[in-house]
Length: 434
Image 1 (cartoon, rainbow, N blue to C red):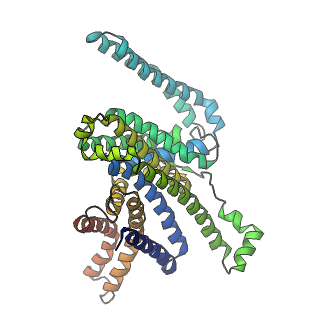
Image 2 (image 1 turned 135 degrees about the horizontal axis):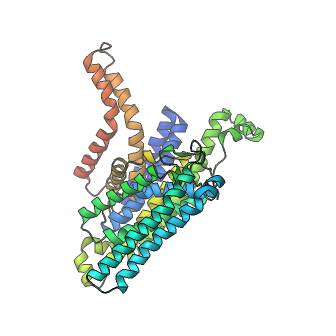
Image 3 (image 1 turned 45 degrees about the vertical axis):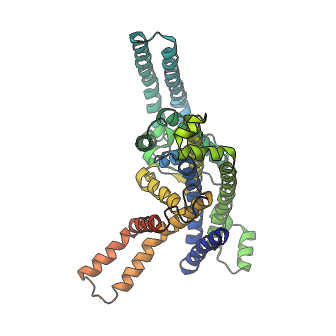
């Protein structure tokens, strides 16, 4: 079988899974799986850019995804006028003072003479700057968070169209990746993994605790949407008439239509990023990145700046994850920092890349769809299987209860089994790198 025929077979199988889900359960569930599969494929593309192209082991994916979600709030939500009047300018001024302190310390490092004078000068600038920053920041934050804390208690956003938040999410994640990369990319791969995981935890902890920024664990709900609301479609006589001619219920049809709009938008973004990733892979830059991945010493001996190239690809991959995070928050319609679990969902994205095929963009897309379908559907399928297996057992029998309870663990069990099977029989993934 040729590579093209095999790839067509794989994606046909994914289509059959999604269509079968719609026919056996509901089309709402099937399209929801497809939407999150599109987002997962974009995340897998970003991770594949870092790992498959350059060999960078980044386990801080959820931190960049969370920054994309934060960008949705900062761009699309309307500003809270009372909060800005109460302490918004003080918060902004404190952030400027904090940035100025860091810049001042960096300039002092280059200007002051070496040894003790440089160390004392930098410490003095940082300590004084910190106390000035906190003196301004704390009062502003208290004033902002005291404004209608049940429904607001934060500064809000810019009130711009939500689609603008997607590229802004990428830029925000790219900026954070640049700062992280300048400090962490010189580390060995295992230390880089620990550093990125720790930084992701810090980012999520900030989102959970800084209520003035995005309400913390109180969550931001009611985010603007790029699609119409279902209730508006149900009250539209033209829409009701059209779906009635097709024999569809307006409530179900409105839900499906909104989800299809999201699917179209996500598919356009995925197609654009996939084309760009493919062009990068087959460009001289892509060949250079793979040469660096395979042998850093040889590439450096040929005059390549390994650290600079690692920083480039780290920023690009993180930006793609930030775009995916903004898209996911837009689809959910709310920002919930408590759902960003770095270890759990970072592991899931890595399984997508490994199963699909590290170093192959098409394989990452395949892995995104396949693993997400399994993640959603394995538990209900496992429960059905256990019910069939235990149908002949008496109610309350210990083995029946044990088997039915074990269905809740089918997700993680299946991920582990799939990963082991792929690593055993196709260690380079379902669509290996050429």
